Image (cartoon, rainbow over the protein chains, first blue to last red):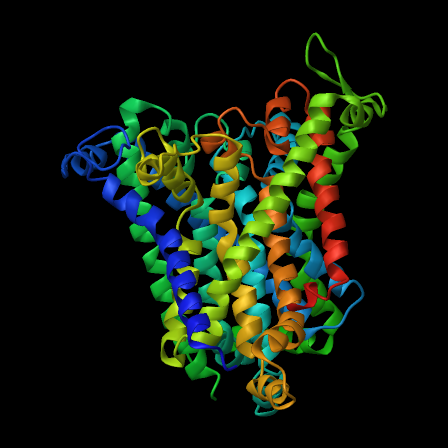
Length: 271
Length: 298
């Protein structure tokens, strides 16, 4: 479209402003972790690395990080298995209620987290507590896995829809049985989408706070819960600042891997 | 032939027989695929949701806070008659609509720039720049705005030359923060729609004598509107269910999520009834958006 020069300039300025609004808060979090001042007044009085070493030695933050990693890995493992199973069923079979299945998979992430949270909470306390299983790591993993299934499912089902089943049929015509065809043909085709789904699932679980609040019980503190609980305590403010900065820096990793994976996807789809 | 070799061959032929049996029975394969995930989603998840919504019709003993399983619609009547509840429900819907409108207004020029004005070489990088904040932690992004809006913070400093104060923590802060959180969900679908808009449509419009303004109204807008609707599904429903942001930057403001949260301990049936409100509103919104054809582009 032939836009006039002023219109182009106006759009460029608006977009630059927009990107500034998106990135300034993140930059502020990074800068604030080096501030000598405990309050967030602007401009900061001076810069120091002191709080980073304080945060490094903070036992509560460390154990919270560890809890988050464990919960994320557990939830991802469950979500990868269940999400892949549903993706194969939906993409490679026709059956009654197929659309309903895809809808139910999306539901845990479409409904507000608090609704999912209290539903699981009351179910756990009525069913599991009589069995002697209280709220804890196990229930957190179950809760997280429930809403992580959808991202694995979405990634794998999209890949399966793009690759036809004729590759598997060719493998079987050449004498491979079902499992061999899966290991040698199907799995290599879906591998990168599976990885991308697993990465997304882990990131989703690592970041989750609402469902965690209702499924964790008193003893289990994930990193977001720890940050939330300590956010309003002036004593802990510097440590919270450093953790927030670390989380901003960590968010670059999944972007980098996702870019690599999609490059790989582009390469393998040329087969 | 060594014994171990025999065992291995026997094992291999068993695998082969099992594979053959599975291959001949697609229904069996399907049920093996679906049993575990459906047990998880249908029994565990839908089961707990169903129990929650049934429990909205129960009551509590006001003295012991224990749930009394007697059927009544008192909770839903309370939703419509208690002034506080009505006020909070309308406020929540208003906040969700305001956030959606703000996101659309901010996202449109950004998406127009990234999809049509920026040089094609830069576009993939700009898409990464839109996506990056989505990976940053939700809590950290809210915390960033807590820092910005704090007393003597960046907002106060920026507005001081204009003789103004920052909004502080409150309803405005909550709307601003929610807009910031969900903005990428609005930019992405609009960017995709504009990027897929074929150039020759625009050329045809210009050849037929339309000025840019007319082309924008008659060609670009009809393509963009469904994508705005698609983005609004995210911005609306994510804002409606949120209660953490309001707790962190909202001051004393209460939205529907906060009411649910504050009722869980003492009156679970009331919390469940309150929880049905965002679900019903979101379903109504989804049905309304389906008419625009937005959901097919999700």
